[in-house]
Image (cartoon, rainbow, N blue to C red; front, side, top):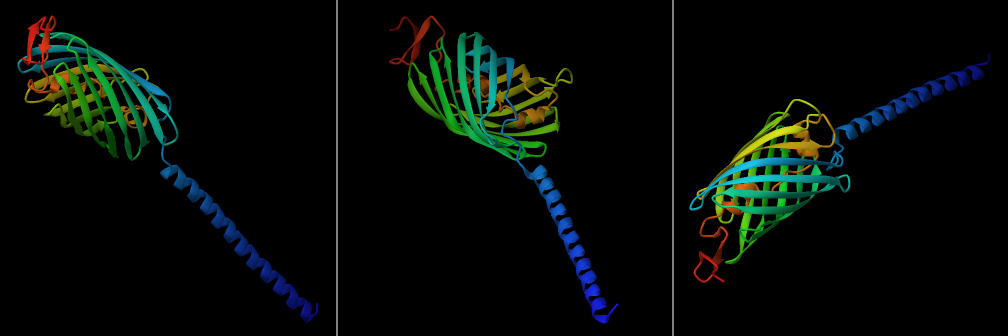
Length: 299
């Protein structure tokens, strides 16, 4: 073999080896990039705001002690359904009914709506509005504002701020409505919370807990909460049944499915205010705006 042919063969073999090394390196780099992209998406892609169509129903009893009015029993039932609108947005509709018995009696109805953005690994932010009416007391209240939640591992920080228009026989009044809660999940199926709220010019403390029962589809929970104000105190207990994907933990349902129902909260809504703010007349007595007192057949 001549000198020129040997030189050409060496150059060919060298270039082929370099090309193989470079080509293999590029292929390996592409493979690493693909794997890295998949890992990045799996780790950082946000979960949907609402995992799927879901809902819940709840029934509760609330004992209420109101200064100047005595003890009142409140029996409530509520239902809600949550629907995903898009990957990051969802809506929820709530409806409920309540019956006051004891030293005062009345029937209450309520409906509410949530429209929100949520990343279940990070936070929720949305609009909230509700309307509640108490027939025998002739009271109506409309509340609208912003609700938000921040998720920090086992801690959830939850809040609401808005306005509440109350229509009574004595006239209309507008109040600031606000709430700030801190919740801790002792386990994924047991939550405790505490905080403060403000409605009807009354500031009150809140404590509560919810526990998922360990049977069936992991969808039945017991809950309790208490509200403590200067003019009223209440303690509530009840059962809540979740519908949707079975086997989910309480924490996952709270963050991936339906926001909480606010109807009849704060000692049954209308009951948290000062006696000077809202005068309740038990039938057959009616409120007289001229004397600002209850009387029989005053109109």
